[in-house]
Length: 256
Ligand SMILES: NC(=O)c1ccc[n+]([C@@H]2O[C@H](COP(=O)([O-])OP(=O)(O)OC[C@H]3O[C@@H](n4cnc5c(N)ncnc54)[C@H](O)[C@@H]3O)[C@@H](O)[C@H]2O)c1
Image 1 (cartoon, rainbow, N blue to C red):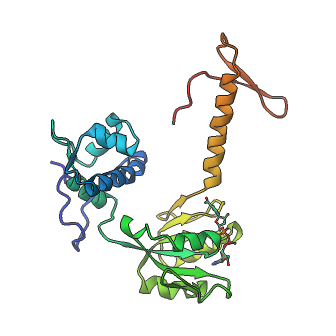
Image 2: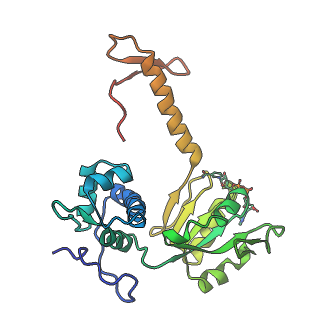
Image 3: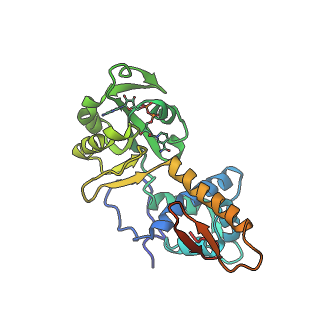
């Protein structure tokens, strides 16, 4: 029997049973399933087929079934998955049964937008503190929170039990901010600054960079344009690269 089939009472205090060591790609898809499941629950659906959920989450159904089997969730033949049970299971595995406190460091253009966004609460997160180094920003109120000076981080991190730090400072300041977050015991960091952070083992860093996403889309645009320019009989496309180099491109679509 899988211990994850019956995850126990969400939010109950006490030891957390060992979680499965899920593939990172599965972990990345679980929030998509969760969002789709919440939409289904909000529209009165009590069960969903794997095809229905896969379509709503934008993945193929075989992948979805494999992902959910890691959680010990197999659905019922002819009925599908119980929507509210699956929500509980995924929220449990993602650790969303307790609302985690988030500290946002750097309250400039991006920080303002993040601090003003109301959507985090319904997804399991509470922005609990805002910090900036600019005295001109300290004291400003955003969405009911007062921006504090970064020097207050150590005290506030304890008071608010900060679990996750979000960095929205310019890149040159980001490493020092990460060091400060780590020093106060934060072991999960979401970094918006365009730089690589160096952190001790045991600290998880996720990076969000819209420019990188746009550059990847740009590559695909470029590639589509190069394929439409191919001679009909050609087995490969020779694409000139700057500097006089040439590469032979395979004809299949690039996998992910
Ligand atoms: N990931 C993305 O997709 C994305 C998109 C936009 C911007 N960004 C990045 O986000 C960051 C913020 O961009 P922005 O436009 O909001 O910049 P901004 O200059 O408007 O704001 C940065 C804020 O950080 C504060 N700050 C600087 N050093 C600090 C420190 N040591 N401690 C605390 N606060 C400090 C500044 O006082 C300022 O208020 C930049 O690194 C930018 O490149 C990322």
